[in-house]
Image (cartoon, rainbow, N blue to C red; front, side):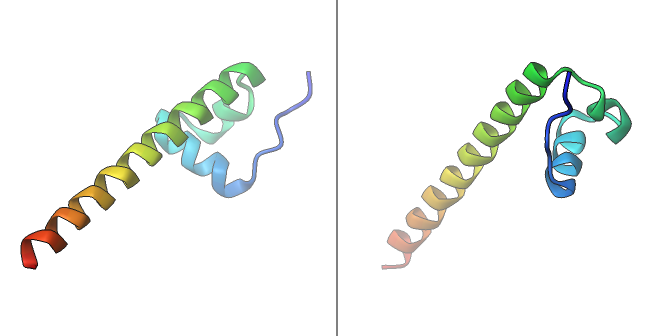
Length: 63
């Protein structure tokens, strides 16, 4: 099986997110990596949306 082409930055973020060493990440099956990447992206998108919503609420309160 071919290794998944991940950038160094993405690999480090995913390893930190999964709390596994980078070496373990490189040996994970591709379908699991794709699933975990999707979960990480979903979590980051949710956090960004939440931050944007809080920012909008703060702007409304100031007005």
